Length: 164
Image (cartoon, rainbow, N blue to C red; front, side):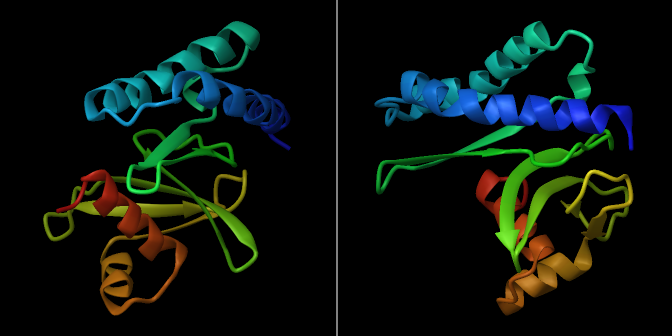
């Protein structure tokens, strides 16, 4: 087993313990759009600094990422924590989802193919080969209403504004 996986699981579990109190402190009453933007933007930085202070020997680029989603219509804040170690550089963490009894971390990156703007990834394990990826299929599945981890990643990318 990769030496980083055990450490990653420990760090992720520690973050999950700390995240709820952080959300209660930082995100209380954040329904002002400007304030929400600033808090959501800076919370990952605060988390990274805190974790790098607690775990100085662990590479910062491998630290678990968080994704905060705010639904103002029902005053709901959700924070997702990256479940699996991701060593692939250049991926934007979109969130995670439970689908078919399995947890998936969802990512996207810009594509080098001029026919497709983005490539989507659904990671389902810590191992380097434990992921599915696609560009054309997720968009087609999304348009047809088929729920797969990659089509959900496509949906998240639309919600985040990566795709118009």
